[in-house]
Length: 402
Length: 226
Image (cartoon, rainbow over the protein chains, first blue to last red):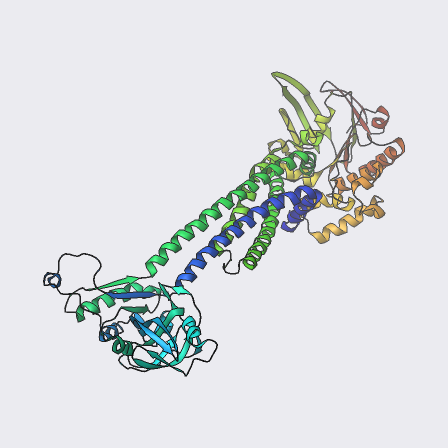
């Protein structure tokens, strides 16, 4: 018997009982759609969290002065010395590591900022041009700090969105002068409104060149050095290099702390992936149920078509052919149900994506693949028994319809 | 062509043994027209099923075209049925969802004959059995006589050597029954061996050889013998 004939015969017998066929396909497609939609939601949540984290800057390693963990009592501590500060040259030295793409030193302080009669306290951040890329900030109007040597001072500043509005209202701010502490700075840019990240509201920040900030606050130490690794794979290397460089420059003393943002992110990633898989697994149970339903319906089909099976045998069908016919029927049933389920699932994900635009809803490929395989597997596996039962029927009793 | 030698068929009903056939010896040659008659329960249908390889004898041997077919396995028997044996049933046994033409085509589909060849042969058969304007109708749209004509066309589609008919006119009125019998008898002229099971003596009397069975035994045989 030809494959095309088998397919045609099977589809013919499916069309012969449309209600049963449609209901079965519905059960199958709901199962598949459930897996697709639920994993899409889980994956969406995971991507949402990951996106939130990477908005803080990706592949970030943070160097801060002082040692937060206790590792014995060092000679510095014995003599009552405070840990050495991180200087601009220290920060620049970290760039020597081949794992590091760029760095942004941070100095932080507060000063009063005034324009004409308006005056307020503001957090002043001293940094360099690279901060924009490292922290993934975006400029609303104008430009960021000028690129140049880390030691270069310049009387320019970038305002956070809210500060700009408080000082200038709806007026043009770029090009105007503001007074910061006892110095005058020209506004070169305004940050796009970004909200809170890593403890700062960027909207309330005033950013100036790091060297100028040091002059303003009369300090030389850095609050943090943000180090961006070349890629995710380089994070560990960058962390190690930064530590080594600092130890080397601080006379063999380990007096800085280096932390990675990636560790936190990975934990979230793992938790949410596990959650997605769990939800997908629960949905997959409905697929198994659909498989059992298919078995039930196929068994009924065998019982209903006993005469037909007897006839096929009388007409010269071998047991294997009968098995193949019922197999093909089950495969067709679960196959079409599966396709319908995928369509339904993707449509559902699309609708959810429209309702919650913040959630990047998209079913992960592994879940879709697993759903398809489970659906087809269950359909075909559960048809083995009915098909065998059909093939084993005694033609004489079958023809008599007993 | 058909040689039954001491064939018995014993059914177990509960813990009782019921013999449907007892030591049957029967030879049927190509072109023979044999009717098997007897009261119900005499074993006529069992005999037909054994000849048609739908049932296996409990003892004895059955040779078809010189080969011992009782020794064949299910797959080989299925092939012999496909190539050499045609069935015509009292209840027609057409597949209800298939058209007349598709029912006629079915044995050829199962045998794996190419669609092009099937088409030619189905057209021929539809023509031969006067079903031309009924070919695309489903069985429930056909009259009894037409249904049985479809069944006969189907039974002959693989050009079998043996045609087994179990009360082929049982569900038909007399006129259409006669018409069907003519069609079957025409096949005998084409050297097909026809075995007809019936309990109607008038119908059975038309056959060249008439076998009477009682309680699983052949009690008499009349007519031409070869």
